[in-house]
Amino acid sequence: DIQMTQSPSSLSASVGDRVTITCQASHDIRKYLHWYQQKPGKAPKLLIYDASNLEAGVPSRFSGSGSGTDFTFTISSLHPEDFATYYCQHYDDLPLTFGGGTKVEIK
Amino acid sequence: QMQLQESGPGLVKPSETLSLTCTVSGGSLSGHHWSWIRQSPEKGLEWIGYIYYGGSTNYNPSLERRVTISVDTSKNHFSLNLSSVTAADTAVYYCARVRPAIFGIVTKWGTLDYWGQGTQVTVSP
Image (cartoon, rainbow over all chains, first blue to last red; front, side, top):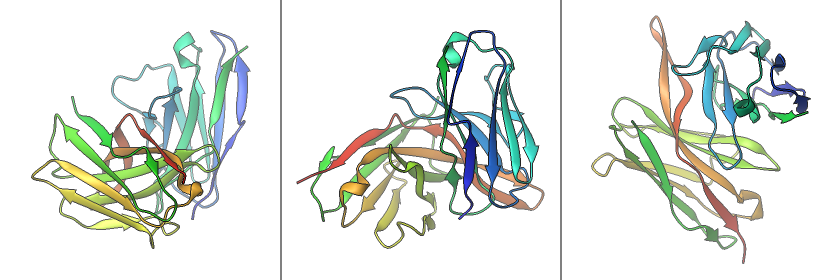
């Protein structure tokens, strides 16, 4: 299985801050990586697909980059509704696997 | 707007079979894979498997011996059976639609674009 390692596991930030999360794959997954947002009691929501493409309806303050084994997810200016947990997920091969998550908390 | 809704028992006894159904509304099962994913504090998000609307399946090797996913297009739903459950199978279970990603002649299935709200399943005597 391809292991996905996210860091940090949690972070504290203020409204307006720039936030960056990284995801490292144990094997080259080219660009086959997605980012999801999950709020408490809710299902994950797809934000970024294929490493850098914004899902329809998702605000442009969210972005992603990277390829191969190293990927980055950025929120350019944190909004109050962005406090949530973020996950990466690869789909280069089966089984699909997810990172351990990054919880973004209010400072 | 497509909606998915999980249903089934919230409590299952050890060694028994966990059975859940995901009913899809606002769209057809045709042309897509349909997936089950679970989430627990211990294991995080774990992909269980998926089924194509035509019936072909792929399962996570870690669960393959115990998992069956089936589809009923006439009822617009798909189902999960997980046998011989233990406390380690306690989790929130989600169903999701799998969107194809087409790269030339290659189609990859791994984009989970519509999710159900999730259902808590607890394994306990």
